[in-house]
Length: 218
Image (cartoon, rainbow, N blue to C red; front, side):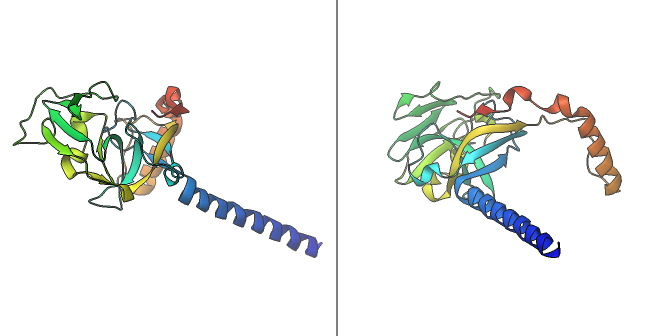
């Protein structure tokens, strides 16, 4: 009995070990989960969306214009950003009074986008509404958020080098709507923990954006 028990314990340990190794390999080379914390990609991606990014695809092909990519923020590589590729190397990008032009062609309607602030800032004040023209350098990309007036992107910090690209977003597997009425962390934290847990459990069905779960990202 003891030998049988030890044998089963070894089998369980081996199974758990294999599962951990497979999980690490998948996360490192194939797919990774991310949460959207901001409004910069609305209405394509909403704050509270949980998505999967394909990390394998760009090992065999190059990112394409229109792809929504996850990448290391060039000014702080410890942070991950998510934006849409608007132009690739050799293409010219310009923004004139909020209107996007790629290779001197009006690109409005080429990609999902929206504006929420109808004030137009001159180029001397901000790159948000008037930018360029600039040609995208070799091996780099020009990226923007779909929520054009609320996105920190290539208009602010420049072109994105290929080496920072981590993967292509492809699936929303869960979506959790922010709730301004939800309790916040405060002292004593043990009390806050149970308050937050109880609130989320009782509001769980209403905070899930059921229509977004399983949506393909385009």
